[in-house]
Picture (tube, rainbow over the protein chains, first blue to last red):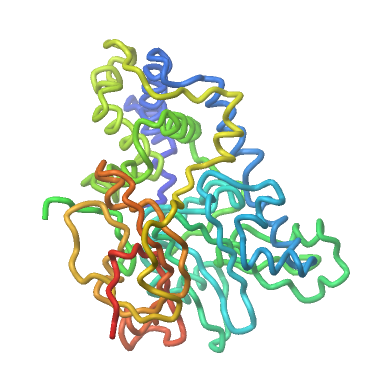
Length: 211
Length: 220
């Protein structure tokens, strides 16, 4: 899948309609027909969009990770029954019905992909980024994980094994990255600010304190 | 074979480098928001299941030239046509031309949080004992199948080890074909990178897939 955002740009000031407006009109037409037929409630569409723009996103996952870093009992629960542990913070449901948390250590780095489509843990990370759904990531993550990490500017020591999780069924994976050095004095809230979306997919590391 | 998936990308060469994206960038055009919302709202009518949606999308011949939300819209229109809910003539005319047909339910705004929080769990009561246990060596099916499946091509005919037993789950292959849930035991199966890719790969890496029981046979 190309991640060519060019498709969404206007192509000059010619008389040809841009692909943006064609798709815009096409999707609006479809929405109109669905509304006229009573299959959808327009107000529900607004709530769905608002939910994934403002409520369900990677800050949810960051809270889970920060709690695991500070609360040993929660960490153990997360690693043995992630669905229940994550639900205890209020995150659950669509595309995260069965959650598994996988923890990075000094010797293992976890990386999550869906080579067959775009399976992603929505309740904790929200909607997947374009690259996660794109052909370069999906084709290479399983065969050349170190090369993919290099695309993200991440270099791991050769002593670290990479464990790639291809999400081929309805189990959804959350990576628990390693707590950064020098973060001992930070509160759980401050720690959550260090946890990036990419670090919970395995394509990045958490930010260092003060970064 | 008549069924061909264009979505099975694992291990393919030539797709180029990954382009990272900032965390807050969710949509690249306004219509993508609407594509997300109408796809989720129509999914919530219960007319088709997620496996059918995946199957419809992966079989489009122009799969690799569509952006993800373009693919979603094309898939949605195909399903609406298949279930006789909306005709292509109506989308072209930008208005309803034929009477509506009943759908099981309509997602209303007030119910969105509850419906999303519930999701669509696939775990089912098991009606047989699991054939495999953690640590067992298994071989995946070598042959492709003539329908939607979730065993990637790169992991066919490979020997791996059961790492986790996830319980019995709705079987995607039958579910996608309208043949019912037919739940099967689901396992996490780990392969060494060497087993999948040969000698030239990173020797310490492993790759796991989640595989239904019928994808696997015991290695003595």
